[in-house]
Image (cartoon, rainbow, N blue to C red):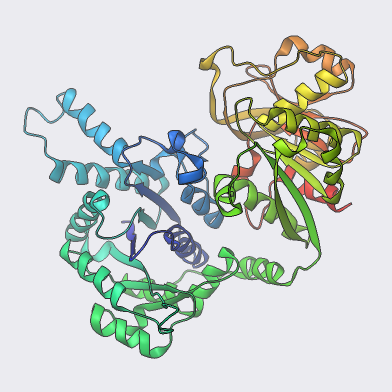
Amino acid sequence: MAKYIFVAGGVMSGIGKGVAAASIGKILKSKGFKVTAIKIDPYVNVDAGTMDLLVHGEAFLTKDGDQCDQDMGNYERFLDEELTSDNYMTTGRVYQSVIDRERNLQYKGRCVEVVPDIPNEAIFRIKRAARKTKADFVLIEIGGTVGEYQNMLFLEAARMMKLSHPKDFLFILVSYLPIPRIIGEMKTKPTQTAVRTLNATGIQPDIILARSTIPLDRAHKRKISTFCNVDKEDVISAPDIKSIYEVPLNFEKENLSDRILKKFDLKPRKNNLKDWKTLVSVIKKVKKPVKIGIVERSFRSDATALTDCYLSMVEAIKHASWFHKRKPEIYWLDSKDYEKDGKVKELKQYDGIIVSGGFGKRGMEGKLQVIKFCRKNKIPYFGLCFGMQLAVIEFAKHVCGLKKADSVIIDSETTRLGNYKCKIKPKTISSKAYKDLFTLERHRHRSELNNDFREKLEAEGMVMAGINPGKDLVEIIELPNHPFFLGTQFHPEYKSRPIRPHPLFREFIKACIK
């Protein structure tokens, strides 16, 4: 029987529930248990693919093509596991399933009600994920904050599961303890209120992860213990840190995994966080920088919003940089600034340039100028999805003489989502990186390189380094006689891991360092 650990938030959003859930999964896995994680989003959207990136952040893509909340990426990176659509649900997805079942007469004519049928559908999905993954522990993160109307039905699902599986259930509240500047003292009242609100749903938290700018002292732990009805050993200090990859180690300093296992009457099967400790040590010690410029289409936004939009790509850059014992320095560059030739010369100050995924004409001309400059001046260039398409267009225009080369969506049914095979050409940068001639990579796009132009492009020196064997579509392009000029139709960033950087990002950073 799987053990179910629900994780919810108190006081305010954005305090790191996803990282907390992923970190709990990591430390339990280090104890020898099989772990999976589920994200519940309270949105009525069926998936995250239609959500505004600047508001909601990156839509992470699973191997089976599900477009999910970015926390799913954290789960994959921390657990080093590939998740599927079984690990993600939204309010919209749950309601859709219940309505479809009702339309198909699967309720046998009875009245279908919000409670208990919506919570029961959520429970069905949770247990299905547990069954398919054969996990010892299933972590379920409920999006939003305790007390919000949107997540009440999922809290009800948690209450119902606790009632039916009391020995296999644990509830963790991630709550914030503010330190108002004008007062200068940590306040526990908001967390006390969050716990009372949770109590009103029929749930008492077993463990409280106390988020704050600084570590909790004994006095505040004792106060939370007294007023929130939890053992003081179950109040876990979770202070702000520079890198999210330190969180599992901080939790272990507070003996979190031991507290969880004790509550389930389990003993660790092993104890191995050695690789993770080495990673965190590298992150803290590296000083020599590698400077990466990411050229985005011309909208003005702060770096935090852009980092959220391309979270997996940013993390992949970090993973590869740390692998080479370098400190990643990421610069967001507005493509509009490079529409005039003179401005592109400043790109020489960066060790490498990335043009990421996207769509639409806006900012396209500036990106083409950047790519041309990188190609001619031997600056390492990595094009992801749209970045590959633009690299092909630039080469077609300025090397092949195809002045009208452009990107046009002909058939919207060509959308590719999820894993597709890629056969890699020998003696290429890609084959050197992968050390194999086959790989599976995740796709999220509608456009493809037009095969009618492949022969012309190859005649002028472009190498089609990766081909999808089933559809005969170009997956990777390279230019020889260049430190690193490579584009992928797929998104390699989704498969990068902190301890196992993606091979292409690893080779890109290596070229940037040289």
